[in-house]
Picture 1: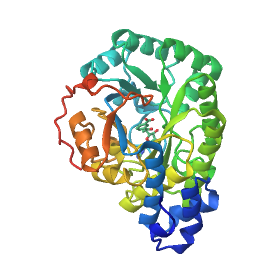
Picture 2 (picture 1 turned 45 degrees about the vertical axis):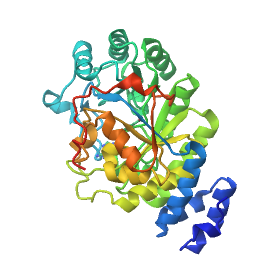
Picture 3 (picture 1 turned 120 degrees about the vertical axis):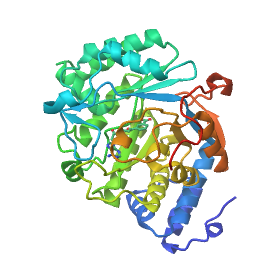
Length: 384
Ligand code: V47
């Protein structure tokens, strides 16, 4: 059994935190700030790895998924975002009809794909009936595919634009085929940060309220944290604590995804991209503070293949999926590529010394023969 002495801490002030982690005692805000700011990066990584291996052993999950973005027209104009086209320039963006969206999905979806990840801009003309029709049409064409769709921000906007109650919206979308919700749009909950990076967006308190309603309706969701812009370590820890409180209440979050800010082509392009130290220290801090969300994703699209591999030893137990047509990170200067072959994901996991497990969206292991990849993206095509 590992003891605090075995950890050979360079930063001795981490010893009481190490004692707690080894004893399975919950960490508090001050602990979070200490682990988010210490220079003893390897100690933080070792601690997060202990928690990761306690939960998952060597198992590292990935899925075969596709992204679908029905529109990039958005009225929110977030400074952090390079994906959107503002409403006044909507002619320069795309907005698919239901038929076009299904055809876009059909380009890339076959029997190997278990999940469609569907998010888009806040388009004032796309109301509840559009999303109901979209989900029904997708389910009819691809009945085996799990629809992970609409962030808390989109749900809030669609309910308002459709002039219906949030509870009714969720119930209608669920009947139409919504299976779970992705974690985007959480950014950093602190108002002073949101004012600088996404001032017209649903605020942090409301994001949490909507997630609570989604979970109450029996729908699981993911959660995210966008880091590496104007926020402080305290803001990150407070964000994680707010998610932890809600998870204590609902148990509805299945996976957390820390998202590395990409500044290119955004209004925040004076900021540098995140460095490797912040990336892995944020993964580790997340694993240690957010102790009640089972899965932690190192999203290879945002981290790049190599940092994502290292993150598998700093607390992460999932790489996300094959994706194929990613548009949000690539618009903001992401260089990791927009899709990976399943064999490449398995290679990255094995090369990191872990055991790949093909999963569905709800983390049920799939028989590997389920998804013999016929993805058009060649193995090793990533530039990272
Ligand atoms: O909602 C936007 C963020 C999110 C930028 O739930 C940016 O399984 C970095 O939420 N730099 C979309 N991030 C991605 C997302 C996600 C990805 C993978 C899996 C899951 C899941 C969710 O990315 C947005 C926003 O929070 N974002 N612009 C940017 N420039």
